[in-house]
Image (tube, rainbow, N blue to C red; front, side):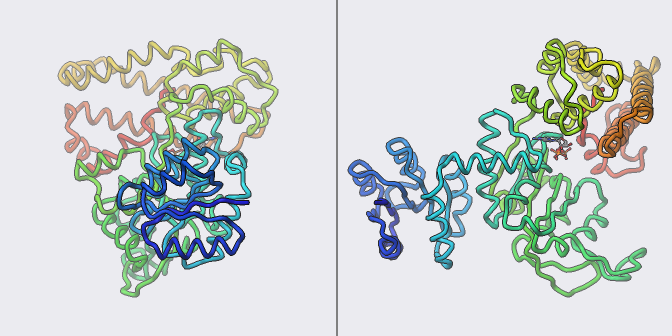
Length: 498
Ligand SMILES: Nc1ncnc2c1ncn2[C@@H]1O[C@H](COP(=O)(O)OP(=O)(O)OP(=O)(O)O)[C@@H](O)[C@H]1O
């Protein structure tokens, strides 16, 4: 016999659920307050509880906590109104199994949810979440926080709510967004993405909303925007913090009304795209600094998922390395203990992207020579990790605290030597790839080119900053870019240290 506990201060909800669930053969008990529910929890054992998040004398969280402590096997569905979805998602993070929105306008969905919940072992959901992650290429490893993250992502993927992903560069925000898409009911629809920091304001606007023929010089034909193209799928807005204030207003409007207009047209279109936004910048801080709209943040982060930087999950490094060795068809290689130790001691500012680079580099350099990856096959920045880190810190401190001194230093121009060293290494590595007898996946070459663009661009920016003694506005003028672009370039993928 299945025992169900319903806790809601709206008596009609209790009556309705009691009738609905009794007719399914369940034994149902109802409580209208925290006090009543405490009594019932002490007296009976339940297989399922449905808890309203708002109660007169307590809240759903307190009951959830109590119930999970006393009856850890009891499944919990949190009931919520539209305005409290965020709270319901928090409840899932704290251990509730799922949530459902009131009023229940789809009884089949409610029944399916209850049946699924009662027939499913918690570990089945976790295993399924992990299996799909493996399939999509989002490796969670053995870190508990990452496992929790993927289970939450899996559960909320099925809901039609916006998601915000925060995490340092290269931690896998885009892969996680694809995972959510794959785990959602939209899996067979389109997944499209755009990097909001990489395009000028007008280009981004036309990319997002589309434009009519003749809307501006160069608009030779009608172009549909991403909101239109991803209509029934998922739209990934990467580096959302970089969207200009004008674009932020337009995004807010779409998120509030689901309506938008193409550039150069007054016709209103509707979109049903699910929005997943990502940022390496902390958006709450950006709001405080008045760089990001609070109302837009509110709309975007119905669910916020934070990915750990690699340095906080170093135990996963061996597993990730094995995954990449297999992915790049190099399972015959092994990293020596010494090399592995260096990798585990390194601070990984470029996170998993940097780890991918290290592995593919080792594969190429060792080809035809050895199957043992020793420390010699690792980039020098990793071999000398501790020294580099300290030197980098000193360097940064010097140039910020003592601009005159750093200006004088340019006479000897250590930056030229650094850049030259990097370009020589890049050149050598790329030629090695070319000469390799293995076919190199194009993705790796593209990553290397991206890295070259970043590092070289940064070197020139640094040069401009030195010549303006750190004045960003002046430096932007010299480089003929806007201060906003300069800010983006400075923060973007700043961590290639090879
Ligand atoms: N958990 C993971 N498992 C396997 N590969 C991963 C994982 N996370 C990231 N990667 C790999 O690392 C690289 C960078 O990932 P991704 O582009 O998703 O990071 P990001 O956080 O979106 O980066 P950015 O902030 O620079 O946009 C990709 O090659 C991706 O496949």
